[in-house]
Length: 259
Image 1: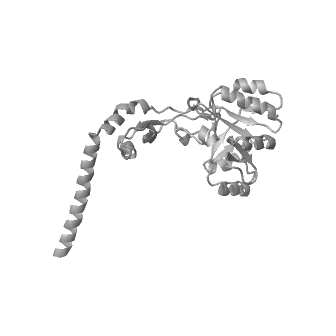
Image 2: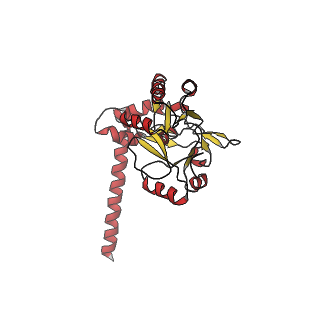
Image 3: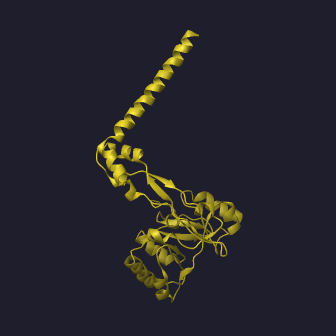
C-alpha cells in the first residue's frame, strides 16, 4: 500500500513539474520582445465575422466571411526558432458568422464573397479545358460519370443516378463536395451534404462583351460547349485586367480568408 502512495505522489510531482514549467515558459514568453511585437500588431490582422447574404425567396446564398483573431501564444511558438516577427507565421483563431454557408447548404450559391477578389470557371468545352490545362489554370468540370482529371481541375458531381453519384463521390476523395443546380441530382446532393452552385453567367458563342462586362469578384462563369477559344483568351485577359484570381469553386466559396 505504501508503495502505491509513493507512485501516486511521484506522478503528482511530475504532473506539477510540467504544469509549473509550462506556466514559467508562458510568463517568460509574455515578457519577450517577440511576444510584445506580436500583440502590438495583432489588431492589424484581425477581422470581424461577416454574415452570408441569404435570399429566402429565391433560396440563394452568397457566402459570408469568418472573423479571425491572432493566437499570440501559437504565433510565438511558430516564430520562436527564428527569433524575429514574420507575418507569414501568424496563427489565427476563427470566428464563425451568425449566418454561415455551413448552416445553409440547402441554398444555391450564386457567387463567392466579393471581398476576396476571386472568380471561378466551370468548363464544358474539351478544347478550352485542354488549353487551360496547358496553362495550369484552375477550373471546375461537371462529370456525369467518373473519369480522372488533372490536378488543376476540381470535379462537380453530375451523376444522374444514385450508383453513378456514389461512384463519383467515392473516387473523388480530395475534392470538395459540389453540385450544380441544373446538372446534378439535387436530392442526392442535399442528402450527402454537398454545396449547391448556380451559374448565372454563361459564356456562349456570341456574348463575350456581355460576360466581360458582367464578370466581377465572386462570379462563377460557365464556359459552354459552344464558346470559342479566342473569346476565352480575351476573357482571361479581362480577368487579369480586373485583378481577379482564378480559383477552384471550393476556394471561391470558402468563408475563411486563407482557404
